[in-house]
Image (cartoon, rainbow, N blue to C red; front, side, top):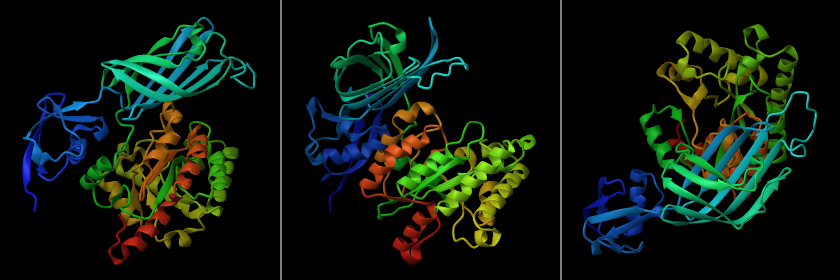
Length: 451
């Protein structure tokens, strides 16, 4: 049996990490073990022994314990910026998302929208010169802090009057791990010069499996984050249904789900069924939402409890929480075939608004037959700037047993339209939480538990 040894690794920030490691282990395996400690992909790591670069297939028994870790100078992760600028013709909002993989591959999306007068009835903002979309993909190479982004594919939508012709590359600098500066074409600038854009890294964008597992171990055992499952199956959940403070996309979302033959768990906010004086919408809208949810149940989707309004559940006192929970539970029971049928269901699901909870919530939900569920795959889609890469994120992050959450927002239908066919073509089955739980029960047999 191989002996364990102490390996001391000095990180770029000067921190020393002591790792117990097998002498038969490879450099690649050590990088993977360091991944959680430094929060970086092994592909970005280079390990040095003295001044010698260690190859991935080299065994640690051939080196001494003192190693130095060097990170690639290529950016990695998601960088974003959203700003509003005043030009001669009015205000323009610019959203930029740049996503970099560890091998240098990148995707950049630029969205510009100009404020328009309410009386402007031009049907197409792109034709009117009030909206522009640009998308670029390619490969990034670094020379120190200087970046060169070679473009392999591009797509533009809108009327570009002053925009320069597409160059073969963009340039920029990667001054720190959290900030990136790129020279990019902006249509609203009204000039042929490229604009210098500073982007900040979205550190929390990716929910890594190890981070989900760590949090789940620290949380009460009756809170479900994901299932440990070998069958290629995930659950799709949609929060904030129907959205109240802005137009809901529920009908469009149901159309996309029907087109792709996917069932989902819709987390219902029951405040839509209250009169306006209690925070609900007008009667016509209440009737429309009821009709859409009845359609959802008829088409095989299941309903979950997401309280009444899009407000952090953790900020509610026990009395207000119990009232909101009961109101939503009663409405879901009515829409799902009546109280008797609802209470006989083997699984009922509760997700606290903002995914923050306390012991009272867990005890109350469990007492009413609910399982509290969070998620393991979340594209942060409540921030609309991420809409440019949400479909890519979902395709990348789904894996057996994952619980996906997206929200009822104006861009969600298009995100699902792009993501679902590719997820399904990869062999992953998508369905409701109850279907995922049933698959887990079947795979685990008598040892299966609710969470």
